[in-house]
Length: 82
Image (cartoon, rainbow, N blue to C red; front, side, top):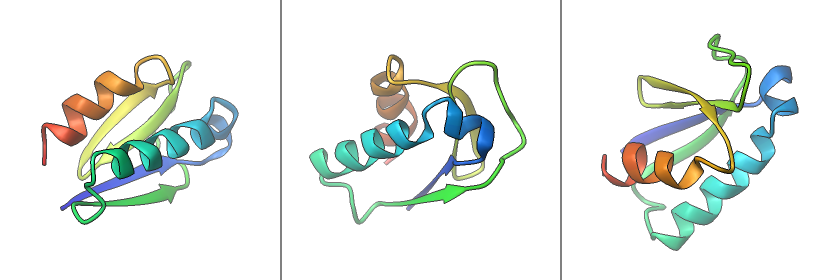
């Protein structure tokens, strides 16, 4: 079971956290892994970056997640981990 937390704090919100949440929801559904992940929001994870959103997968924190690098992030840190 993967626990995916998307930062929805003010900085990440301004950098597109809502877009990342929507991309995650769609990708989770598309790959039929709803039973393998828990998707949740989190206020500041404490790893703010100048670009993109911070996403924590279990204990690993990933910074700079954007629409442009989302597919690679999803494949590497979510699909490959399941």
